[in-house]
Length: 331
Image 1 (cartoon, rainbow, N blue to C red):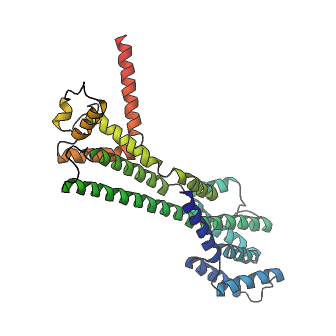
Image 2 (cartoon, helix red, strand yellow):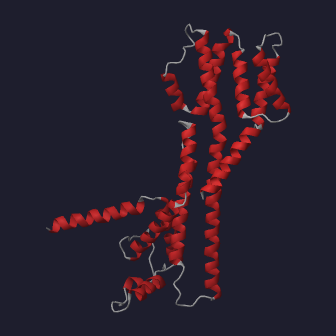
Image 3 (tube, one colour):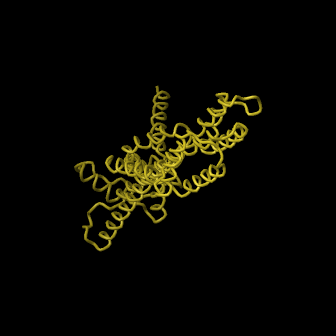
């Protein structure tokens, strides 16, 4: 499973090395136009060579985020002193937008240069370089972060579609009568499938709602490391859905909200002298909802058991606490 992920990030890094998105190219052209508007401004020879190389890459359509970052740094280093305070103000506004309010407040708590007071030129230029580095880091990381989320969504969608196809095939086989009458119905498998889908969708929502604030390198690293645990919520969701199914059949969860099953289950037929395998087979045979409404309730609760991963553990904990309380009262 990890191999496709490594290939994904490898190919994406290659894209960053060889292509700048259209909005990045547009921003480069604006910076270049600003630089060309000052033809008489003296430019250091080394700066001139770097600018020429980057402009050549623009003509060859091979600009990268690194090139744009370097070009932006060069343009800001050529700014006259009277422009520095306005540039710092503009970059701070951009940084607040891309990094989030929490990161921006942490930046302000570090006591950056106060634009309302007397600030040395070197301090303003140092602040500009810091802000640019943080802004461009997030410009480059954000598409990768989104790619991880999209890749996870595609995997989850594929698993859901495969599960739906399997359920449909099982239903068709039952309808055309290929299975024998004594074959256990597909109710248990449907419960497991719906619970697994609830777990997958819960996990997908968590990935989609991951905070983009904080260290961007750490965030993308967390997404990559958590990939190996992608399908664990599906497994736990299926198990929790089966436990809920058994709790309802056993009558431990009752009420108008919960499904009711066929009378054979509630009457508890006498199978005391029969082998365990026969009793389990009867449970699977008879553990079917009594009506379409009960079937719908079973599907909804199976999904809830997988989606709300703490529901079944909390329910079992309440049963244990109640039992312990009853034991103490009996003593």
